[in-house]
Image 1: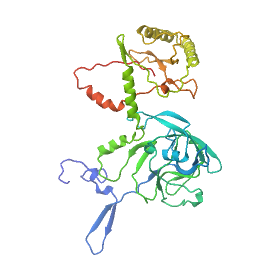
Image 2 (image 1 turned 135 degrees about the vertical axis):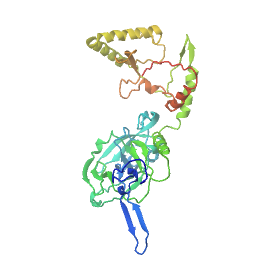
Image 3 (image 1 turned 45 degrees about the vertical axis):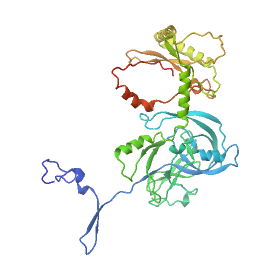
Image 4 (image 1 turned 120 degrees about the vertical axis):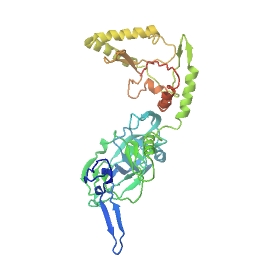
Length: 427
């Protein structure tokens, strides 16, 4: 390095070598053996602290048959908007489905993860509290729940905190697979109160289920496991072993976001919906027409007439007071859509025996847009009551084509000419 022509000096010792090669930045553990010339140099590695999530054993039971109960591992996750239960535990308790619900999950990070839609069975589950009492929660069951609730290191606090060694610099841990995930909807009902910080760095807290331990600190490494950082759904994996390349690690990181969450029957359902769509697709009067893709069985869809009328009158009153110009644009937009055949007037007393449903709508004003400064959005997700289904709840969404986006962009670059067009979207 003394003959190097580049006049660069180390940031730490000011010698003529690259800072990354400076030996003085590392602590050295020198082991000398008397009678031998051999000297062993080893780099000291700071013990790695583990991040421990809140987990607690609790007695869970079937509210309809309280005698059906078992001890389950409850994972408290304020980063999840919903609560879940493992399929095996639900079957063991004999839980009956109270309802079926279409859920949509978008793992983190949102800009790289597709929205995953699936149908989940919703159960009512009972949990015994630590100090006399019970709490009842609604949990969803997925066939492939292992990707949401996987093995993780936890520190299980004893029921009596006096049995806990508060002065120990390291604390024993267990590697468990939780049976129940309680999301943010029940987080505050658990009354988690921070009590004291242990010598190992972890925190001891009290909850309705009993003492819990979490945070970052030193734990014993009695059982090896792959260190995984979690945020609701697994988003990163840090593997200290093996010879994975950086590209492999990045690929694994993003492939873990959605693995196991999607229903395995989605592919067959998507194919069935696609065939039904093609069978109903016709070409009439110079344009394509497609039929509605109703779910089977389909929940009873209310008309929503009163809600739609009330929102319309509210829009008219609001626009007359604040911006009459927008009210004129509102009327002009509907007139243009009637003229183009996008919508048509239907007398209210006309009943041909089909489904009658009224959609609410609202204006979207974007003065910063060059062309479409004013547009009307129809809300197919509107519900007249919390328990009533919306139009979107009764229709199939169709295949999710986000995964094909890369191939679509590549195909757009193959031909000489590309035709782009705009579709009107009704929410």
